[in-house]
Amino acid sequence: MAEIATEKAKGKVQVFDSEEALAVSLAKYTADLSDKISKQKAAFTVVLSGGSLIEWLRKLLEPPYIDSVEWSKWHIFWVDERVVPKDHEDSNYKLAYDGFLSKVSIPAGNVYAINDALSAEGAADDYETCLKHLVQTSTIHLSQATGFPKFDLMLLGMGPDGHVASLFPGHPLVQENKKWVTFIKDSPKPPPERITFTFPVINSSANIALVVAGAGEAHAVNVALGNSQNSDLLPVQMVSPEGELTWFLDKEAASEL
Ligand SMILES: O=C1O[C@H](COP(=O)(O)O)[C@@H](O)[C@H](O)[C@H]1O
Image (cartoon, rainbow, N blue to C red; front, side):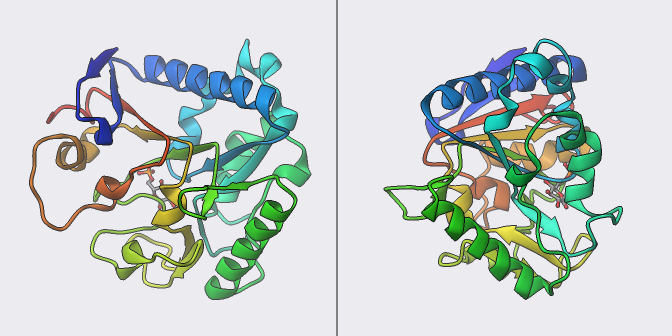
């Protein structure tokens, strides 16, 4: 693993020689954080992405982590979700359930999926209401700096166009600064209807892991971490958490750095 020196705002950047090494390191990072937070608080709040991210969590499903992680403390959220039934192939919930959640002992009541019976707008409002309720019960805490919810860990992927969550380049949603959760009906990546956390929520996180692999992502990685001076920031360049940002890159994604 090579570590690339960057300015502090860009976070800690790690480049792995193999998929195996990246997955092993991500599992250790996540398990260490789970261990630390579980000793301090009743809940470890974890926000998942869809896409390739779930597959990168696979080493958590093996010893020692499958037995040592305090899964009962985990509370699971989605940074974005497609507005489709939960058993639909496009559902980020289904992806996470099939590939991860069904294999660990996180209590079902700690898994906060969207209400798939609602419209995009209704589902976004409903999810924000759910988060506000969890603030009242002290499962989620608010950032003292921003007043937005502060999740312990956000596990983010990135698309080849530099999108994160369902916040796409050039879309007005990237500027949303009041809502916690919003919706999109014209996503350039199918399916078109989705809900998504906004940047103020993403950037109030205590920890963000950005997990990016593949040559198709190399250009956006270079824009984000190289010395480019683009005036229209890609969404990935707007990821700037209150806490720590850690990049997990494979060597193909880092190939233009
Ligand atoms: O549509 C989405 O895409 C991004 C990136 O996915 P990846 O497969 O390129 O890693 C994902 O992070 C997001 O959650 C998802 O809804």
